Length: 234
Image 1 (cartoon, rainbow, N blue to C red):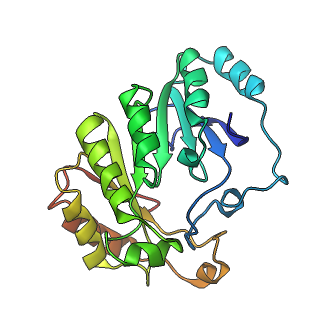
Image 2 (cartoon, helix red, strand yellow):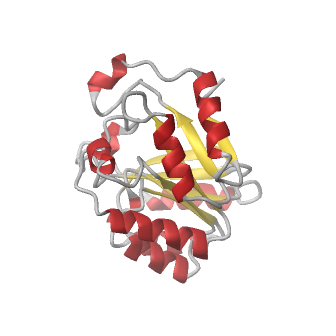
């Protein structure tokens, strides 16, 4: 199974309206400078593995108030044995939310097709143009991103897309471009940029947009998407 390097026993923030345990997997195929989990980007033996049996024991003892498990990273879909891990949580009676960057539509499609996911949250890093590779610090196949978006919108009942709004990287026109591409989506979340503990340390000196600016962006996104939420604002 994938190496679990983090376990948050109880979270009210990682799955809207749910009480969930959150599982953190190591390794990511992107290099976003604004990533707030930089320790999980590169695979390293320095991070201790959390034994699955200890997680299982906690879940079994607290089934009465836990609604499900959130699997995040890093990027979970880079692990070929991710379905095995999800299967073990489902055997414990847990619903599953998957956080993903959408770069592996094959894995995503297999999981959705097998009915293994109850909720998918996909990060859309930028408008679907050359800016995507620039912002992620990686060579991106936009066809994969588009395929994942289509899969989620066509096959999932419960899902969201989300964008971390980083000044200099993204502006109002970019947010409108993303929102228009996912037009008709059930939910789009705009995340306030957090300049603490970023992968690119230069961004720690960058101030986030004002909350008012984010609300203005959300108003524009609402022209295209059914529900827009703001996270990380006051």
